[in-house]
Length: 352
Image (cartoon, rainbow, N blue to C red; front, side):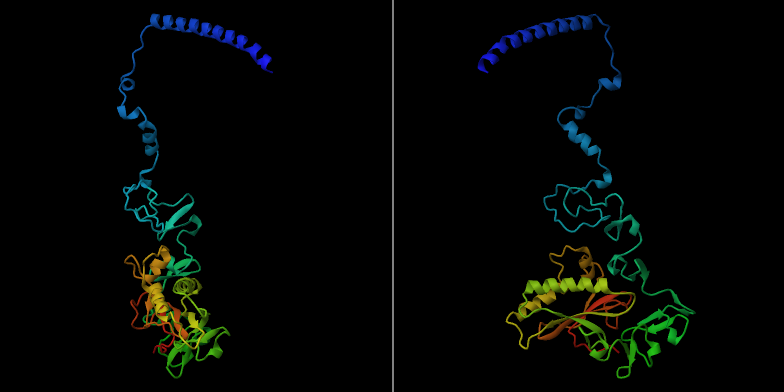
């Protein structure tokens, strides 16, 4: 093989010199041709080029001009940018990527969230709607209708409903906690309790499912065991999970008992104080919360919020914290025209 390679080198060398001679002849002919041709005058706009269009900056300049102004963030490159959850149509670079956060193709911005175009004007849960509306059949609907049958708008703890056994026409019926004298003054599955003369769902546990308790507020509520040795972090995560589940499980404009957090031990754990602090922090603190809906529920970022911590809470044996959904809150609520997830110590008396 070595001898074969050596014999090829002179041939390649001679071919190279021959090709170079041909190229020199062609170049000489081209120079003579250009010198004899008449000069061509450049157009004025071609002769005056902006210095910014030349050099290494031209590629980046062209790239920046291809971007839509709507996607340019005035704060891009800000070393103090703090990454938070993406919220569309707020004019801010939430995720610190140098772009104002907008929705992708085939999506539209609904209440700060990018949603498929097929869901325009629709909702997945109550937090997708305004504070005075609820999500019913994937459509936001005002909690209080403008009128009810022949009557004007229902007020207080009354809801516009139709109960076949009590009349065929829509009428204002009492919701949870409303005063009543008979069952026909209460709406939906509620009954009128003789003892409190108020609309409730249950009087005792026998009227609820096997895994539910009848709370002192008159609602059947699902028990959730927090375990025998919960940590503060575990309790915090469980509370947040159940808060969002309470919103998603709420059906229609009906009050609903969601969760009764229960510690099944006769003695309080050694870390009871830390668990009480975790309980309070999960319900009131906006620190390190990135989920937009959870921030809206708690009332972060100057939003009205939908969480009402009604009584002081403490981690104790038994049911120590109960969550319930109230579309028509009782007296003392932070607002009278919105829905709330109510948190109490599971020993609150039924409203009257």
